[in-house]
Length: 82
Image 1 (cartoon, rainbow, N blue to C red):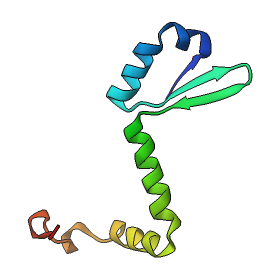
Image 2 (cartoon, helix red, strand yellow; image 1 turned 135 degrees about the horizontal axis):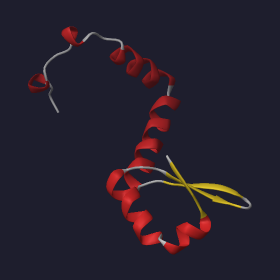
Image 3 (cartoon, helix red, strand yellow; image 1 turned 135 degrees about the vertical axis):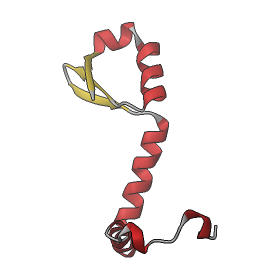
Image 4 (cartoon, rainbow, N blue to C red; image 1 turned 90 degrees about the horizontal axis):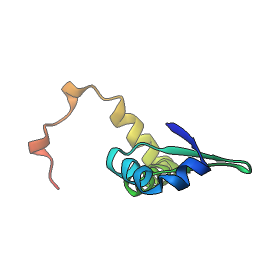
């Protein structure tokens, strides 16, 4: 994560916003009162979805079970019924 101060952020706000959106790279902006983090909307929504899913104990268990399942035991993508 890149770190810049608020003065440089103000000078180049359009460039920093474009880079954050295009490359999904968070940006830490430091000020005298503390720091803020700039995220792309996609990253922000993904973070919210992850927090939601892991807040449900039953879903958390399902996700962990899936993560620990060997690939050889999984069905192919073509077999998934959407």
